[in-house]
Amino acid sequence: MEFSVKSGSPEKQRISCVAAGVFESRKLSHSAQILDEASGGYIANLIRRGECEGKLGQTLLLHNVPNTLCDRVLLIGCGREKNFNAKAFHKTNEMVARFLDERGATEVFSCLTELTVKNKETAWKVSHAVQATEDALYHFDQLKSKKESSRRPLRRVVFSVPSRRELPEGEQAVRNGMAIASGITLAKDLANLPGNICTPTYLAEQAKALNKTYREFKVKILEETDMEKLGMGALLSVARGSRQPAKLIAMEHKGGDKNQKPIVLVGKGVTFDSGGISLKPGAAMDEMKFDMCGAASVFGVLSACAELQLPINVVGLVPATENLPDGLATKPGDIVTSMSGTTIEILNTDAEGRLILCDALSYAAKYDPDTVIDIATLTGACIVALGNHPAGLLGNHSPLVNDLLSAGKTANDRCWELPLWDDYQEQLDSNFADIANIGGKEAGTITAACFLSRFTKKYRWAHLDIAGVAWNSGKAKGATGRPVPLLMQYIFDRMEDMGAK
Image (cartoon, rainbow, N blue to C red):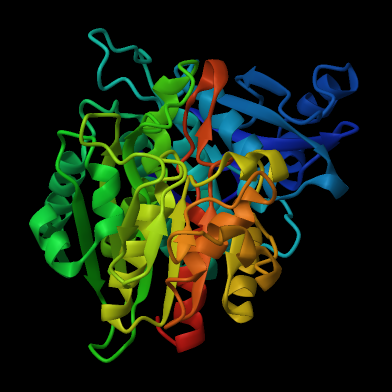
């Protein structure tokens, strides 16, 4: 897809389609008004006759509108003007992309970026319009023998900006949006691949491919023998039931000063989770390939940082393994020793994510990090608590937590803080080891974070439980690419704090 920005009046665009908004009740947006005036009231006349009420997502395609140079005008309903927010903006841009892709309009001049979204500037709207367009047109057909494709797909989108002086900012917003969208697509693709293809070794190969693509990118792969030397008994305990060797993948984007402390992102990479000896129910177990969405989001963020050549240091750590039952698999009641020296009684082998993350979090300390954020599809309890809208957020440093909450609001990729109180820690007490790997039925998301917090005392840390937001189940099942937008916005915000351009 080709994206660009342009300043110009909509009726003068010599293009196959111009898209403009209509609000309830039948109120034309600024560009729609200009098109209507040029056409001598042609559009307003149709609106008065009830052809388009302006309800969110409603569409009306007009051909050969008088005194315009475009072939078509697409009117898109935006709902109530006072309620037009970031979510509605995303939906209307998705609708334009899908509608035109299905109807043979290969290019569009989109005036939706003129619409007012509270507290959002033109650059934000351009970047998010790019992301919404790519999101709308994404489909995963890599493994289908017959691929469906539009005869004349949408190939070019030009976004309207108010004036020529905003063109440079708009062009940078396009670059940002394309890089983030590419990162989201990479995260989706990795998570949608089946477990027999996307193995820990496959993930390591994808990291090496990024290393070849980007100059400021470094990759180190730790094998099981390396992990044994480091004492990563928790991570290795999960891998014991699998014939696929575990990997600890370390990716470094070195765009900042060598003395700049890095942001370290740690993504859970269980490429298939059967539950191990504590076997999951068979229904919907096919979806357990998505248990590496945390890892996939780390890949997406690192690739976007490298694509944009951001002047900041970011490290991505991905502990990758399968969790399967086998004669050698870890059993409930087994006790293992983590890299930190903490002994762990494994009461449930299906609480494996925290076991691989705790060793990766201990390893993260070697980078002397500015902050560490782990991202994991960690607990079903998070879905029970928060549903599928925000990610769960917990951390040991209030400013970091607040920065992530703010980034989530800006990116329209929200998270919600849960308490990380010492009151919950005693639920992890063990009669036989330093700590148990589960804390009972109550507050499952919180006790999982409490477990991880035992291994993050040397630095500022936050935990994102993305179990509810990383994957869509049901008929439209597939990865969402979240929380790549949130994490990229956090990185942009950190760059602004540091004065980096």
